[in-house]
Each structure stands twice: as structure tokens, then as C-alpha cells.
Length: 167
Image (cartoon, rainbow, N blue to C red):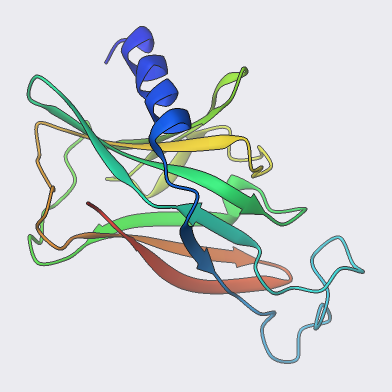
């Protein structure tokens, strides 16, 4: 994938993502020393992450599923997030599959390998609301098949699992 193509997709994410998104709610684990605060201490935990409604971008035979970060609580890094694709297709991610985090005006901030379920780079990057997420599945078309992007958030003062529909 060419960097220019990826950045072009990001522009589409910035323009095309609906503001009405999905808000994911997590609470601190029971008995956590962070009960009622985020990992920075002091602010209530309620909605540490909200992701905008996804849309598909296809170029030739390659597919991207794009999301925007609508809201991110403080002190949450991408390394606190693991991701996987689940659903009726039971598709195993190929080596091409990745998730790229791009920040408006700043370019690529983090890259996640779906087959390895690990951050390749940028895991320490803080999640912010000016970021977009591009799920690249190569030639694998997941459109309108009922698959989801499963998002797991694990940190010292928060945790939980939720999903976002792949359009």
C-alpha cells in the first residue's frame, strides 16, 4: 500500500464519517484502586472511547474500513487496545491486514497487525479525538457480511470489550 493512497483514504475518513458514532462504555475493574477515576486520577470513568460510524473505501480490489475517534478519555494509549475481526465469515486475517491510526495533520501515528494481534509501532501514542482508524484487509471483502471489529480496552484503571460493525 502506498503512503499517498493511505493518506488519501484518511481525507475520506475526515470528510465522510458520520458524527453519530458508537460510544463504548467501560468501568474500572471491581475493587480497582482507580474506582471512579481514570488512570490520570481525578476524572470519572464513563466513556473513555467513542468511535464514529464506519464506512468502506475500495480501490481496485483492496478494501479499507474507516472509523474516526470521536472522543477519547485522557491517559489511554493505543497499547491499551487490542483488536480483532469476528463474525459470520470466520475469515482469518492474512499478513496484509493491518489497522493504521492517522492523526489529522500529523500522518501515521500507530500501526497494528491483525494476524499478530500486536502493535507494530506507535503503541505508546495517546488516543485523541483527531485520529482516524483505517482497517486494511487487502483483497478480502468484508462488506455487508455481518463482521465486526472487536475492540478490547485493558488498562490499570479501565477495561472491557465491545465491537463496531464493519459496513
